[in-house]
Image (cartoon, rainbow, N blue to C red; front, side):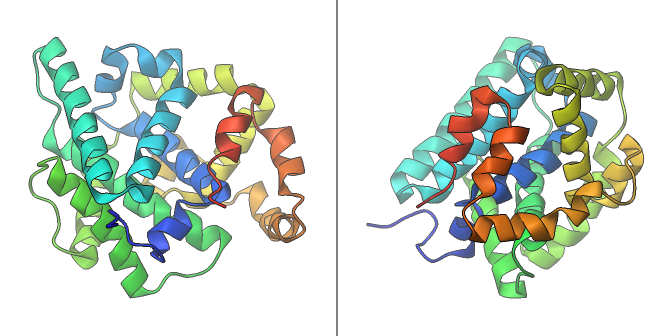
Length: 252
């Protein structure tokens, strides 16, 4: 059986751990709020009504693609394209091509950043592999002007961050929704996690601190993983309604 992402791939390792995915989620939640096309996510009303659920749905689609057989993964990608096309038809406008690229770029960037934060430095070949998987997703979705390789992606990523991010009224509102749905303590933890993984441009626009208090907690948390005690930590910091979903993110 042929899989969209071959067994043994670093991408499967990255997306097979709940801890890594939670940091991918943290980074994406920050950058989503700054994207100039975030109004598209407000158009349906789903993002402000359930920002955590909306972001988790994006994560779940990505995981479905990473761990599915080739044809099933392609069907999942086609479903994503169809959902977006329906939203475009409803609004009578087209989502900008650069906005589609931005989402792919987030998945690439935060996959690398989160894994390196929690595990180890990735080799150039492994980073190229992460790029290739999500670039194939973009190709299937017929997103134009995708970079040819990881090196080209690095350049385009910086260009997109400079051109397509801004602190808008949607940014402020979305962060209020994060706090509302997470509560004050968990919201502060989210912001501390964001500091650890987001690019400098995102930190500047959100006026995040240069250093995170969580940086001191990473080494003992890694130890708790080895001792299988990390779920005690997660039980404290995660919203009750998402605990089962997050537990299922770990691929045994």
